[in-house]
Length: 98
Image 1: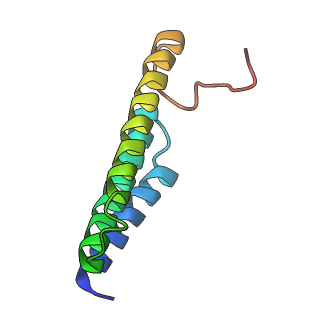
Image 2: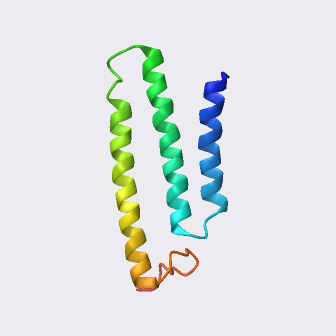
């Protein structure tokens, strides 16, 4: 495994462990998801540069577009949760309650 692959694997795994262990606030979960998407974007960009083919050149931009849509939907949910429940703590949210 090259150092570049190790760095991107480590950043993705750090984001994943942050998502699994620090689930107290919705904002921290969203930041971990964004870190994971950023590491995937950079790894996919470097992979298409190493491949040297123009067939996969749109893949990083497509991933970045989906990441921006995911971030905007997450922020909208964060604002809606903060307005209705008063905080973004995930323990306060009861999904079975209307």
